[in-house]
View 1: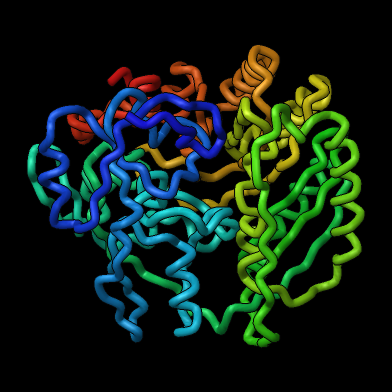
View 2: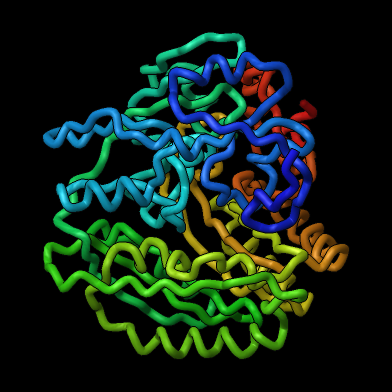
Length: 430
């Protein structure tokens, strides 16, 4: 057993039995061993979706081989442990890239499928699962299944299925043609939630990527609405500037004082960059990746990410209520991201992305004080008919899970009984 923090939020240090697999053909043998197991990829899940305290974790990052690539169609087949960042770097010089990518490139293909991740361009591209053409799935009873019909129930259960329908051995993905590695970015400051929604609902297909940063230490919040598009223009290759958080301090560096200093500085610095400018795709799509181990700045107690979604009919009032509640609590967020999803319904039974608006927030772990805030936010989400993103969750109540994911009972028909995680036991009871 190895005791370590295997979740990005640093909330759990429970012991796990780690098992590594180097060849995809060995997966059936590993899964046949006694004891329930769950896959663990790059370790960027904030909560317990890829944890199995006291049990077995299958470490899949060494299943990192490309199997085939068609340079004409843009169809890539690869193993489940391949990092999204590897695909981006190797394919963009060939004129292709992933059509959907989350806010970090340090995610495996298997993890992206299991959580049906979304990006800044949901209006146009939908979620990651929309671009998965086929899957090879290994079950703990020895079955090796080739899933090729996106409408088949097991396929839909696997997309966003939290790794509970089987181990993803490999996948075929449809990439997107791009003119190069550069993007044009435009930033527009705003000073109220209503201003954000006016900007978000004026979606221009010429600018497929949109997202907003909020200063949630004040209400009404000020923010920065950012949009981007791929550019045929080229610039010099940027020098990679990686900073590193070398250690975890005994207390969180993200606190009321630092937030009231950082947020105004961030707002005023970036509002001066409002004019369109050329940026490399990496800082645009993955703004935090240049700070290695940035999660350590929350200290040894770790932190929670609270990402929720509210449907269109209640989004304005719910977002206002959420932000007002946070301001009254005196606990702002270093990372406060607001994004409005398009009308494409995600393909997975338990997929998160759906029409509506999502708000993502980071909070230091302050025990019961943090939980009391979350309980107030939960009530707003439940009354609005919304849900919480399980890829980042570590404490969602069962009642909110069941109302937010109404297909959860149907999903149980397709889960693999030999797979189990801390999250599945917490929310599904097994």
